[in-house]
Image (cartoon, rainbow, N blue to C red; front, side):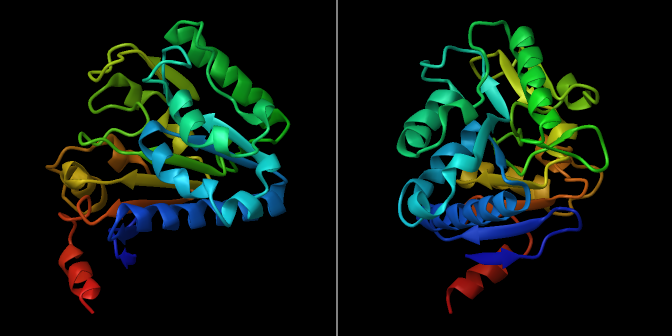
Length: 270
C-alpha cells in the first residue's frame, strides 16, 4: 500500500497492489475508527453501501473478530434497493451474507429499511429512525449543521462516478433538507432506491470511498484529480466532508489514471 498526494480537499488516497491488501488495510482502518469511537462516545455508528461490503470480509477473521467490540456497533445503510431483504439485489442481504451472519453484532443494532413500504415511505421512515438515534446520541450530531454525524460512512463508487444512490445529473444531488431521500428512476435495476443525501454524507466524521478495477479508473480521475472546470462534476467529486476526513481505497487498476500514479508504480518496483 502507498499513499498518493491528492488535490486539496480530495482526501487521502491509498493505492493497493491487490484486493487482499486493500481488504486488510480497510479492515485495519475500520477497526481503528471503531476503537476510537467506542472510547470517545461509547458507540460506533457505521453506514454501509453495496459496493464496499464484500471488501470488509477480513473483519470476520482474526484478529478483528476477537478484538473489535462488536456490541457497540450500530449498522445503517447509506443506500438500499427497495426490494425484499431476501432479494439478490438487497444490500441488506449482501451485508448479512458476507458480514452480519459471521459477527456477534446485536440484531437490534442493525437498522435496515422497511422492505414492505414504497420507496418514499421507506425513506421517510428510515430518516425518522435515524432522528430518534441522534436524539439519544447513538448517532452523533454534526457540530456545524443539524445533520447526523456518522462515525464512518463507507461508500463504493460506480464507473459513472455515483456513490450511494446519488447518480450523475439527478435532482437528488440538489436535496439539502432531507437526510434520507428516494429515487424511482435509477438507470441500473432495480430502479427504486433510498439514499443518504449529500449533506448527511458530508457531515460524517469519516467517509471512505472504495473503488476497484479498471472500469472505475476514469471516474476516480475525475473525482480525485485537479481536472478543471470543463470536466463533469461527478457525485463522487461532491463528497467533501465539512470537518471530517475523506479516504480513498483504490487498487492499482482503479488508480491507473491518477496523476502521480506512475510514481506509485516506480515505488512498487523497489
